[in-house]
Length: 323
Image (cartoon, rainbow, N blue to C red; front, top):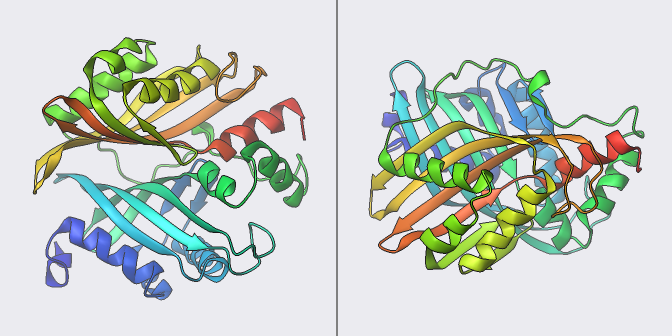
């Protein structure tokens, strides 16, 4: 790997270039670190090419000039065929100091988590999936996600012109075809999420650590098994007939950290139940989800699960016409 000349290992490379791009204002380094035609998928849509990433990075740096991105973990796998895949979890903080996408500068501070899955060969990232806790961010700026989404649709020119959120039918092949590794911790967490999505919520009450701490979409912290269960019930009960799929799983142990796992998953189906997204609307929704877990002697002890509430509301509002 050519990054060995500058970085001590792959996680150091991922953490290092993130700081270099965002906090050290090395925006032009994206011309080297990102492939020219890289697809970057977020729940809000898909972009092609590093020039779009550069433009979005500059806009964010302008609106939130004190933004920091603190690496919490890099859970990664490697294969000779596909290169490296990092699932990078960040705790990011900023102050709304300039006018921009989120309206007039409010001076409000926010802290949210982001998980980015990046495929890399050599010094180049060539494929990416990213989930930001958009709902948690807008809440801390003083909005409710549903109301903010209505305003966003209007700002984009109304329902006919508004940018469409990501759905599998608009996906492109960025070149990464790996599925992770066969580490036992990844398999265990994949089994856990599958059981939860199969409505076995007792699994949380029985097998999570009693002192589990969950960090969830909407900047919600859940302390204890019952609170963790409420998060998952709230999501699944909104989409009870949706199809759950695991797209990528990694397990790791060692490195002076707890055994841990990273899963990229999706829910596809109808908003046909009462839950975290209110009255059922019948809208068809795609949810891009990312989850990290840490294990201890008494079960799953920390869980980080993100989806984008704004992207979900956007799909619902555009289909129902409730704008």
